Image (cartoon, rainbow, N blue to C red; front, side):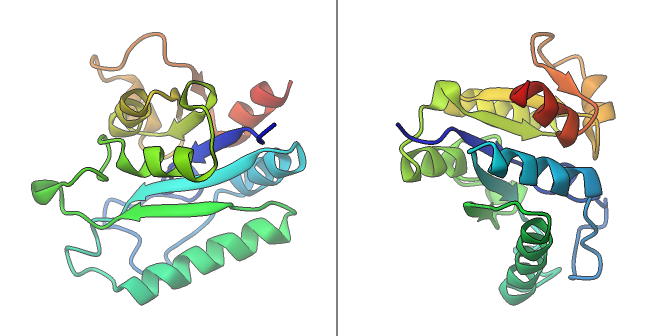
Length: 179
């Protein structure tokens, strides 16, 4: 039997978000409870992956090398807590030239589901924006909204389905999932 898969958005879920983009390793600041949450999921036998829009690449705000360094820092800090990221998918597309991978399109999630031979209907995608929630639905996954990042403003969006479960943060999602 395959391990269950949980997919996470990055900015606003794992780390503090910025309207000015996360453009450097120093600007990437973890939400400490999220690192703990990922470690708890890992210890419980879950596969954990990240799917993140990174239009800052196409906008020229940072280079692929800087993004790789940011992801190295994120991975290292998660490992320091005893957690693991099994995969990281990112989409560099500018919103005005969005391809099949830019959320809310499901391309990144579908690739991860295929990579881990997961069942989409049993896979959670945790995010903080309406785009994340719609991406989960477009991929056939279970959406969850966290109130970190842009989550509080997303909760006030009338386009958000009332049946989407809402959690204070990734740790509260994890505690509910593991209970």
